[in-house]
Amino acid sequence: MGGIAGYIGSRQLSDASLEAAREALAPRGPDASGIRRFRTPHGGFCDLVHTRLSIIDPDPRAGQPFTREQGPGHSWGGGGTWLTHNGELYDHLEIRAELEEEGERFATTSDTEVLACALDRWGWDALDRFEGMWAFGRYDEAAGELVLCRDRFGEKPLFIHRAPDGLYFASQPKALFAMLGRTLPPNIRHLARFLVNGHRALNSGGETFFEGLTQVPPATMLTATSDGPERVRTYWDPRLAVDEGMEYPEAIAAVRDRLVRSVQLRLRADVPPAFCLSGGVDSVSLISIAAHELGHDVHGFTIVNTNARYDEADMIAVAVEHLGVRHTRVPLSTAGFLDRLRRQVAEHDAPILTITYYAHRLLMEAIHDAGYRVSISGTGADELFTGHDDHHVAYLAMIRGDAELHAASLAAWTEHVRPVVRNPYLSDPELFVRDPGFRDHIHSKNDEFAARLRVPFREEFAERDFGAGPDVLRTRMLNELFHESVPVILAEDDLNAMAVSIENRSPFLDRGLAELTWTIPTRHLVQRGRAKAVLRDAMRGIAPQPILDNRRKVGFNAPLEDLLDLDDAEVRAELLSDSPVWDLVKREAIEDLMNQRDLPDGESRFLFSLLGTKMFLEHRS
Picture 1: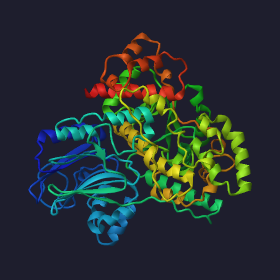
Picture 2: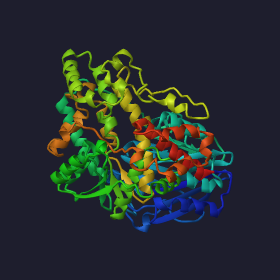
Picture 3: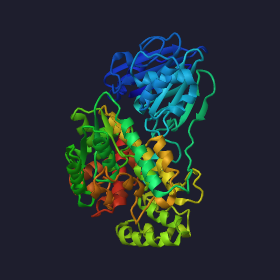
Picture 4: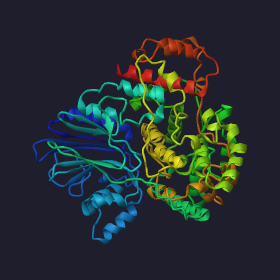
């Protein structure tokens, strides 16, 4: 685990630029670092940079850039293949055993050496055997080829910039800019997309907040040389493959077994993990498996929100008492909010996308201060098992052909779900029956938000097909998993965690578990108006019953007014001060917004997005 950066092309980078890249990645890897430089067979140059956060085999022998032939170092290369690797192969012990049966021998106990050996022996087909998260660069000195590869779900970032002199890559933009020798200009269109359509639209066009900066897509390999064209290969194609014959008890048993195995794999480390604990079924399932099924000494960390609408204290207390785990409460502090947010924006090289991720950073700091280097979170459960408001209405549309099931489900939805739904579109149980393509509920206020901009912006909503056909529920879930919700969460989680030298792991983002959920019939996903039915029932006997039966979905959030007094003269002066952002946004529209009282959620989110955008542009001006 750590940070990576590098380059391949016709330009000889200076030692100072590579050292600057290494310094920019230092928080991601404070334990060790290395730089390796190569002359390519085509007369060009390749450089690999690594900073290390020691999680598995902390011995210096496992340092990077890594080669099985020569060991890590800081010099010009002379043969073999080299890796700069950010991530973890959770099944490295099983792969190591397979390789040893084929005669391979190992000098370390690191997963990086297993990765290197597997690729050397089995070629790129080895990727199909890996369970983990990764972003790595692998340079083959004989062929003069650099291969960049990213994990299936995109848990680890991998930014790239294609310049006339070659290809640059890094875990974070600031490290890439250090090698490039300049900062790329802000992407004004992408900032407008963020302000108008929100964070769920940020992956729609493959852009980032900088012009000319993109990412290697998840489940993708990019091959480059110093003088030839790139080659791109996708090595995993997630598809829905429903087994309509699967009975509900079969689905429950299979999910239970696979999720326990996923948690077991992700607890592998030479350092103890901490758990992000909320009052919801997702995080409580993970911490319950670790404590009850796997016998781990568990420590949970919770952000405490005093806003009654988002308060989960009752369910968290149930979890802590039932499990008997150590627990640390982290209060949502208003102290120094603007200064903290400004520093966070500078660290992220981007606006902070929602207040949730401002609070998440406080959680990561508390985990770091308690001495932990690994955190476990529940990212992905909503998108694998159902968890969003529109999933209920989509479910009703998909079971309409079963009159008995539909009648019972509609009655349960009317009693338990409809009274708490805030989006007016989703109060209509026939919404997706009349119009399966309806998506206005996702960007319901975008015309109002666009009217506050000085530059025109409009972008139609688009989805990808994952073999779901007319199943609107599975189409939504798969798009949320791979394009809308989860990519944003993963990016923010990675930045927040790695800024304080913590590795974040997400057991729900397990290939085997995901592919299993895609075989479960849609009719099983919601039961008696309760989302995540399969997960809840799979966890019975493991997780606390009151949490499994609790219908209230909270999730962490807070209005901006909880953190900032918009009536304070100094706060108003700060928010409305001269800034490059007013070339993009109408200052008078923001002043009018700040004069309103009891801002609706959408308006509060817009104001927070504007604040982050303002700080981002000021940092880059």
